[in-house]
Each structure stands twice: as structure tokens, then as C-alpha cells.
Image 1 (tube, rainbow, N blue to C red):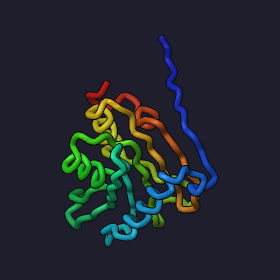
Image 2: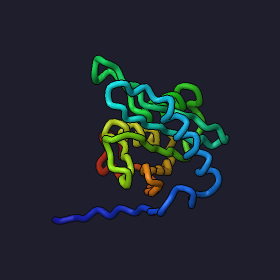
Image 3: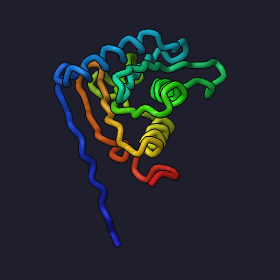
Image 4: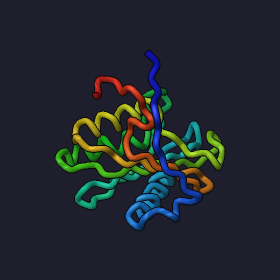
Length: 157
């Protein structure tokens, strides 16, 4: 038996087309990227998470000379949310990057570990998380759930 998967996403020419609440998240993600600790890659990733109560949490990548001891921006933000707001729903996560490791017109995409953490966050809260990915030139991809970019997540139905 052969089956097929379908992915739904939205594409915008620029993140400034987003609703006001997400526009603010993008600005916070840019702030977070500026403060990233990336002395080895010079690749600054910022994430901003919107909680159901309106709280915004920033995260950025934290590199370490003892690779792979660093942590991605998405996990920094989501783990902070889980530790400090364990009963508050994560509504949206915005992720963007600055640096030469990705073409300016390509959206940075969460790594496999971050995708799995987003999946676990959705499972934990029993609700999808909107994922907004921003390219350096402003192009924007929007996914309404992690299963659109992580098929068959480990241990999560």
C-alpha cells in the first residue's frame, strides 16, 4: 500500500505582512539573535515564543567550544517556557537567523532536535504550535503545526 503526505504552509514576501502580535514576536527574535553567543560559527539564531497569556519569551543559540554542548535558540526558548510557565500554552514560535551559513533568501529551519522538542511541546499541551520561519531578506514561511515539518515524530502520536 502506498500513501502520501501533504504539507500545508503559508508563504509571505516579507514578515511585515504578519499580524501585529507576530510582528512584535519577529522584533523580539531579532533582539534575541543579536545577543546569541556564536563565537565559532558567527551564525546568530533568535527565537521568540508567544504564550497564551501574552508573555513573550526570547531564546538564542548558545555555542560551546566543547561541541555539541551548545543549544539552539528554539530549545532555549521552549525549555525556559516549560520550566517557568509549565501550565501555559505555547501559541507561536518565530525563528530567524543572521549569518553566512544560510542564503539570505532561505528561511532557517529548526534542526531535527528542535523539531522533536516542538513536537513534545505540542504533545504536552495537547495543542498545535504555530511556527513562523523568517529569512534574512524577510521572506516568511508559516506552519500551523510541527507535523508539517516533522513527519513521524519520535514517541508522539
